Image (cartoon, rainbow, N blue to C red; front, side, top):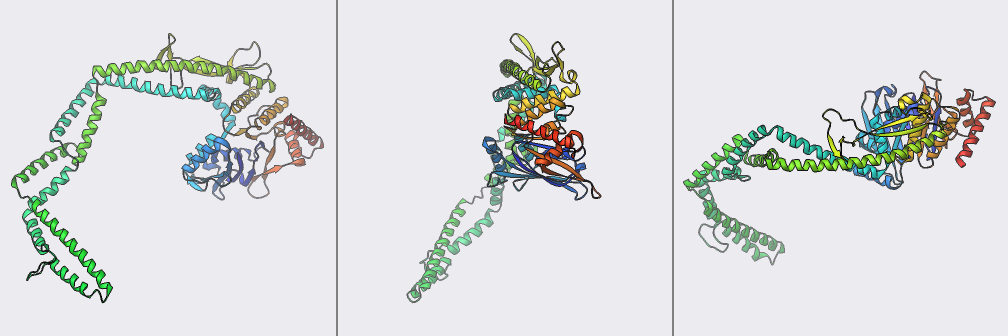
Length: 585
């Protein structure tokens, strides 16, 4: 859950901290006091779109910070995501999130004290928070959103089936497009393949080897300077060639090293340090002997054969002919050949390959059709359960005769839209299946079944959408639910029922409710009030917790605009008592 939310420099809020509880948190306040800024702050904290116009001119930046604490499997998943990104979770299992927005529009995000991309906050938000507001109600009026909502309601097994379908659909479309491209561009593919084959034939005849041009360049250098190299190596070898014990009127390096070693060894009994130096001279003599042997081998390897030099010239000329056409060096030519072979396989438009692709297309089309049928059946079953659940909620929201239906109908084939055969019929299919989903309302028995936006008045639509949101939320989803004035246009008994339902959700979720209805606010486990301060030159707002008699005064203000009215306070206290009884029941 979200334990704490601090907002600084956002809209009318200068600096305030919201201490939240695990149950139902209600946020109230006068119109214009800044209740919406709380929801805006939550959106920013969890990766929402940043609007620099919301930032206060002084101090010129807005900061939203939140402390998140999770439990169970969701905690493990989120914490793993956080630690993999290089951030840290506190020892008590909580994590600090923050988002900073400057007045110039620059935005920064931090998770667990480490700077992160804003997308990281969005990833966390998708798992831990769901916002249900009036804009979300409008979103749910769109058919695509209704289909997605029904799929989520249907449960994890249905979502696995949908993912399997999407993978099969993507493979099928890829094969269809590949086959069509090979048939449509057969001539161009054949011409490109001929050019690639010519290049591959030329490269194959030369058969370049990795790094060969560098090796030949070095060998040419040696052959062209063979005499100078021989003289240098022979002179060095002659100076080092004699053994350590050799005696000669013109001592060489090894003789001098041997003399030095023997001289030091003779005095070693007097001073042990001379013995150590003598041992090092012996190592030096050994090293000189090794160099002499290698020089002898080098002299033997020197080859001044003019025929070999001519062969190398010819080989380098052949390699240069390839590098002029295909790449900057031999390794590049080899890479070009590998890419050409891969491309040739892709260009294949032979009858045999086209037959194989056509068979694969038919196989995948059958698989897509079968999965689409299963998806439809699963959606129809989920639609029945969903319709019953929402209709039950509507009864409690003073719409006892209303019923919500979920119509799952076949997609209307569009121009050039793909189709598959299933159960003896042609189905128009898309990435989400062969169905269109539409929520419809029967306002009363005998009324026509109409789409929500056409079949409900403003007040009815708010109640219907709240019932839908409650059913969706009860089906699982994130642990924290935010309801932003979804009770607009509702009052009286229906308002009390809304409070009951939100309180019921709060038994299993953390619920944050921004409301103007006292009947809803009465059900709060924690009541927060956003209040304006107009005492200075600039209007600011802060948030405080209200309890006991203060809470009754706030409800009285919401009821009649008279926080000090004895009658209003008595009515508020009665509301609080009713809410307490309902919550205990």
